[in-house]
Image (cartoon, rainbow, N blue to C red; front, side, top):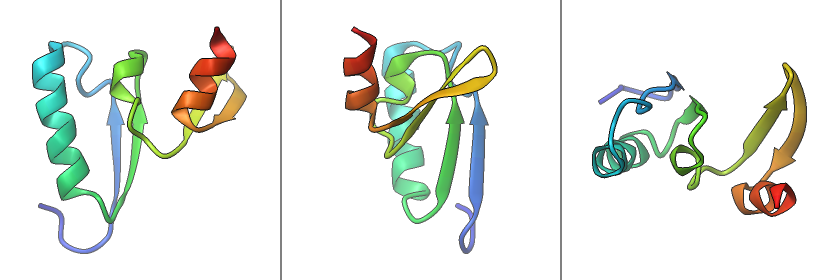
Amino acid sequence: MAPGLCILILYEATSNLGPTTEGLIQKVIDEEFRENTVITVAHRLSTVGNVDTVVLLEKRKVDRIGLPRDILAGMS
């Protein structure tokens, strides 16, 4: 898809899609950009569930940085 290394920035790219379509698109992104940096901005937790690192913002400031499971555990 993209020759060489790149940075892909996705801003609410799947916010208007259902879970099935979102999953299909996420699979393509994971496969096609696995050697690249992908920055995803999303409000739905399902969108960022399989990322390497989450940066959680609260009131425009970094609140937490970590693995998705650790961030979710801290929100309970």
